[in-house]
Length: 312
Image (tube, rainbow, N blue to C red; front, side, top):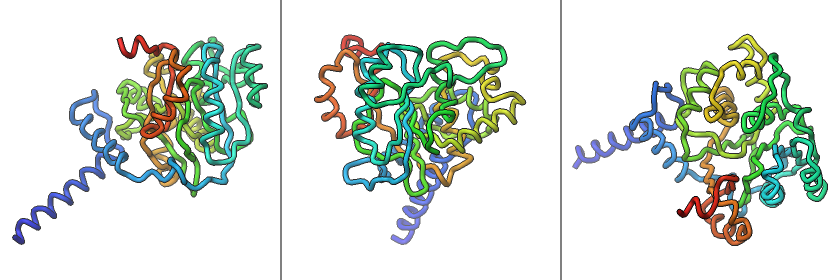
């Protein structure tokens, strides 16, 4: 009987040590593998059973003020109002201002006015590049987010995509902790891009691309200084010089990996629980939100997602 208890004890200790290893940064391999996927699964299971004190009914409010930054183009005008309302309705801490960063648009200016948001022309936020190339599309929005520390007055600001809706009460900064949501999705090429950009040897084996992220201006500026020190160029030109394919670039991965290691005591990783929802189902969003909020924290309605495409 004694040997049985000793064996069980050894197994439990080994399991705890393995879980600890799986939940901490490890060397990035040359390619993703079944072993890496298993480590990721262990980390996700840990986060799933771990108590999340930052999102749910009856969680304590935070008194730390934040700004909200939403890069947007007219294509996402259909969901923008829902995003703004969800931010005001579900973030349990003071919101100083909501900034819509956009190209000139009468429609988006009207939404900003109706929703009491600040409209900011994107060209005033986009960093200046040495080669003067005009950035477009998705990559442009990522540079806007990385330079959003030039907007607003709060030390902390939430960047959220204009097609993402928060559906449960939550806080993002409280008691000396900043919350980083992670998702089950995983793009190995994005990790490779971040490895080249940051020059780190180890990485969290999870995905930080959660469609929204709380950023701290001090930490974001530390990231930019780090990029400049590693590459000998201004941060935007350092990233631009990587010649990364658009689908492999992720501002959320870049910031998340940096702060999760350099500022580990101040960061809390939690499961993001995001649900993709067809945009042409927006008329039923009220019913869907109520149903999905039992399990998910946010929902994202990409322009290319349709009911027919998701069910067909």
